[in-house]
Image (cartoon, rainbow over all chains, first blue to last red; front, side, top):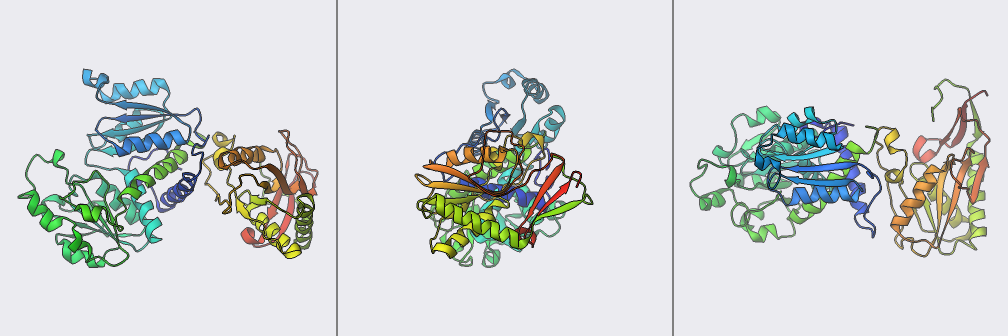
Length: 307
Length: 186
């Protein structure tokens, strides 16, 4: 097993499949009366969050607690970071406290890679800048596999703000490793040139959502990340949603079995209409539940064995 | 426990037909001791306990026409030696529909050795529900207990030394039925 989970590229097909299988067993345990497992008793997991997050932080906290690990939550607001403490000094503090795993979310791409050099414990990337968010990709893959039965040969469209999306990057890497065919869809301003070549040569790019939909098993809508946009990437949000938003009319173009995903938080009415988000094809709530199982699997596989 | 070299001397303890007779006998004993397997659930401990539990249920059905609920209980997450080895993959936990509350649970495993697996199984069981009682059935008891645990049904007692290893093969997993003793000074 690997020591850190910094990128979806850290996972080969066998390891990724092991994580998904383990997540399946963890999900089965979520149904019983006593959800707690003694597995990580005495281990300490630090949630180091330099960026706002609801579901990812709560999800990691629930996962660690269900495995009986001690959880320390750290958010940049209200900590010494606001007094100017650097990531390195914070890392050395955590190291001195004996953290067995550090779950980090940071606005700077690559922060988890730096952190891994400063601490002895495992580092789990919970989102770094516009780079990667590997556990989101794992829970997405898990959701697809449990809804559609397989990943190999699955056709997946990832639609929207690919440029700023760490979810998209991690998903392209992981899904390609597991044999799915990914198509990136969005306005040319939000899809980096050469992204397919940089991530995986099998990835396709399209600027026309309507032509892509009839061939897809999965459509993953991305949030338009206005907080990361200093320039204007499209004329107006209305034009964006007319061309790249998923509404009922577009959803009907999908094959019967296809599912609609969104990593959350959603801009309802922008990239996805409420009717689509709340439809039976949408897996958005399921993704949150699966997130806990997938993160339990990751924590168990990183921390459960001999250090 | 260090496993002996692949070319170490080995001795067959139970052949395929011996193994079948032993399973038949345990099935009869379960019927006898549980007054016809009423309110009883068989739970196999993966990997090889799970198919053994299935076989016991099939034999009980063949003898008396009773369908005993059967399932599997993975104990990996409850082991006390997780940190001594590389991370282990999880096995399947599948409890039968009616659950285990108020039932008599018979845990089924292939080899009883230190007793630590059974201790972990008791912990796992406690989190799944509250059985009225718990019994243990094993194909082989090789001794060397490290905890105060004993089996209610034993297929075969095999006196071993710690340097030896007992290898159970089952058709469902290994393609043949056999119990083998390897290593030591045979």
